[in-house]
Length: 441
Image (cartoon, rainbow, N blue to C red; front, side, top):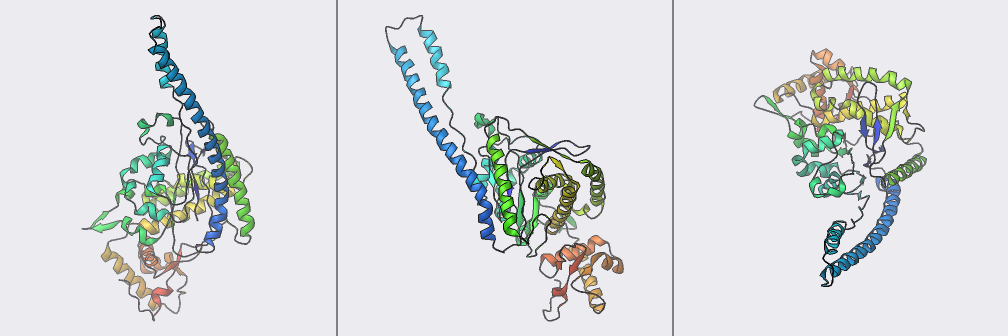
């Protein structure tokens, strides 16, 4: 499960780079399908309590607004009656008329309802967030499917990119909502989806030329942290399966504290930004990770250049998300930074599995045939549950990326699976099982 909270942002300032606004979003990983309803109900409690508190405040503000409106109407009618009297002196009429015009423009504005909890992510709710109507807290278990299946996002790609990057506050229909000028909402989303949903976004070869979906060309999907539901449990250093009850209790306390801060900031016209920086050890480690990103862009991430361009952005967001519920200071440790890097690499793999441009079909089929022949010939010397991709590419004299493309294609269709915690090896037992008589095509 990936949970995302949209609200007052933190400011993360890495060395030698511009400060970046980070949304106050949180992340929790646990085995898919294992008591998800119970865990989801527990995680939702802080959000529900916060929403109930805000609803009470909104009800009180609405009652006060109604009284103010009635008082405003009474004052307007009083002035209108005074102006309608024939006994009114001509010298007083312009003064009362000007006062009436000012009073008519000073109608009390209704309070803004917030937050709005999104349990089922739909386009109308997303529009409300983008418009700045709601300070939204989004709980998204598997709702990435709804977002990807919709057609609405294709119309607003560039604007959503600007919102995510923190280039500018949301501008949707802003001219119709002058009361929302002070709202500063920045968006951070996660997609937890299945391979069958992402099929239509995969690049394809048409007439020997690679054709990418326009959401990939615009870099929209690269701004998401994509997670593919392939049925495998990936152990995480962020979540402790040995004591889930205590972990959820700690997580709830963190959410209560975070939501209390958000509720306090909600009363301010310009919410304060919480400054977060790297400590000395993490600051020394940051240039090394930047160098690793540059190397990855030219090698294993070259085929997902959209994601590679956002790798440092993901690293900063993930590092802040890992540090906030566990750290007592506003200085990020080297441990949190390295764990954020592990998650960034994992998201890169997930993104590649969903959107990596494949080689042309004839090349892919020839490579798959060569890999299959090599595995069958060496069946007595290889462990089919853990086939090293780099060694296989070396033995066949193929580029590693082409062997990796074969592995991703097999995993995408359920014929193979990447080894848990190790992206350099793959389990091809289903593909090699003679009883299933599976062919690549």
